Length: 300
Image (cartoon, rainbow, N blue to C red; front, top):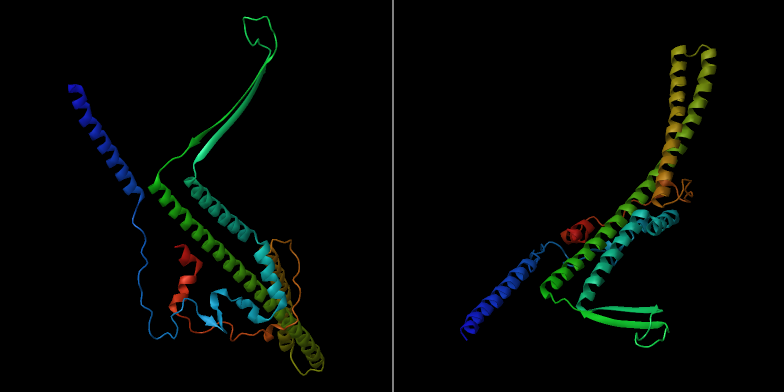
């Protein structure tokens, strides 16, 4: 009787200690939630919308390179978004993060472990008898298992959901980087092609000038020093052509590398480099809220 009275306080202390331990572990998992700071939008902006618009379309969703109206550029950007290795790796990271989220969500469902077996042996069924018939047996069963840890489950869900958002923002950042590299390399290619055309025209013009001054030197109208100056100018102009041609090959190979393709040439555009529109592509004034749409800001 006395021992029963002694064990009862011990049990109470045990359960109190267990409850306190669970509470402390739960507090360790259940940290403070992030609270978004409230920032007032300046009244100087005409719109407080999240997205700034241009021609009725949100700027973050606008394919700004299409404003150039260059079919070759549009095709290169589209192919890079489908074929670039970095983008495909980023998409794979998003799939992985979503799979982890689904795996954590499935933890709410009890787990069942099942098994089955079959055995066949020539041993006797009953040792008493003289029968030597083979013995066969089949077993099957399952064991339900469920781990109840609500606080850890909720925190894991929050972390997995945040990880999905971060990977999506990272994928968008890679897409923007690839688009900018393709567009920049394309315009660099067109610029070098335009420079090559100008340089060849300059070589042709200097060649004609040198021929005329050579005749003038034979007639004694100009000195040998002046003739050498024209010869040097022509040689320098010709020396620039291989450099420009190398830059053309370099930009072409860069574009093909971004497209995950073998090196090669890029299809010529029907429009001259000087005819590419340079105004009205991006609006001059943007509200500060546009910064919230940057992938790196979203990931942070």
